[in-house]
Image (cartoon, rainbow, N blue to C red; front, top):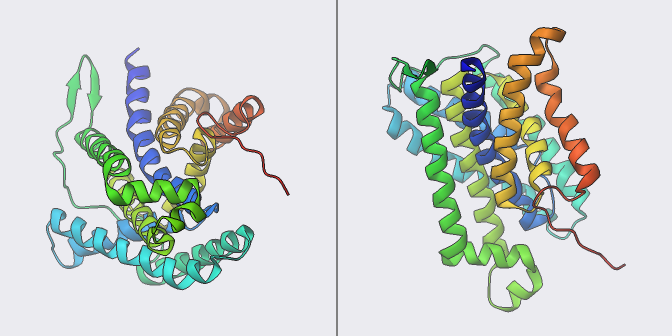
Length: 294
C-alpha cells in the first residue's frame, strides 16, 4: 500500500506539471486552431536560462526565475511576431509545419549553447524528506505541486474575470465577432504565445529541479500531447484533468508494469489510453464537437 501511495503522489505531482505545460498547448490551439509542436523546446530553454543564471552568475533562485519568465515572455512574443503572424491567413497545416521547423531550430540552439549533458539545479528546496504514514515525500515534489496549483488557480481567475482573459475567450469562440467588437485579435495572439512560453518555462524549471536539465526534456512536448488530446484540445479544464490522469498513469505503469516487461511501457501507456478513450469520446473528455459546413 505504501508503494502505491508513493507512486500516486509522484504521478499527481508530475501530472500537475503536465497540466500546466498543456495549458500553453490549449491556449494556442484555441486562438489559432493549430498545435505548437515547439512547446517542448520552450520548456527546456526556460529551464536552461534559469539554471545558467543560478550557476554561472550566482543569481538567487527567485530573481533567476523572474528573469527567466520575462525572457520566455519575450521569446513567445518574438515567435508570434516573426513566425506566426505572417501565417495568420495561411492554412492551419502551414502553422503546424512552421512550429515543427521552429522546434528543430530551437533544439539545435540548445545543443550548441548548453551541450548534451544532464545538469543539476543547485539545492533550492529543503533536502530533508517528509515522512507521512510511512510514505516519504520529497520537498521538491511538494513545493512543485503547490506552485503549480497556485499558478493554475491564478490563470483560471485571469481567464474568467480579467479584461484580457475575457478577450482571449471571445477570440477563441469567434474571431470575427470579437474583432467587430473592437478586440485586437493580433494582440490576443501575441499575449497567448507569451503566456504559453511562460507556463512552459515554469514547467521546465520545476521538472529540472526534479530530474535535472538535459535536451531530452524536449520530449515533454510529445508527452503532453496525449494530455491535451485526452482532455480535449480546446478545454483548459481538460488540460488540467488530463495532466493528472496521464501523470498518474505513467507513474503506475513505471512502478508496477515496467519491472515485469523490462521497461518501456511508461512512455507508451498514455498513447494507448488516449486511443481507447477517443474511440468512445472522439473530442476528448471535455472537448467540444462541432459540425463544419463547406
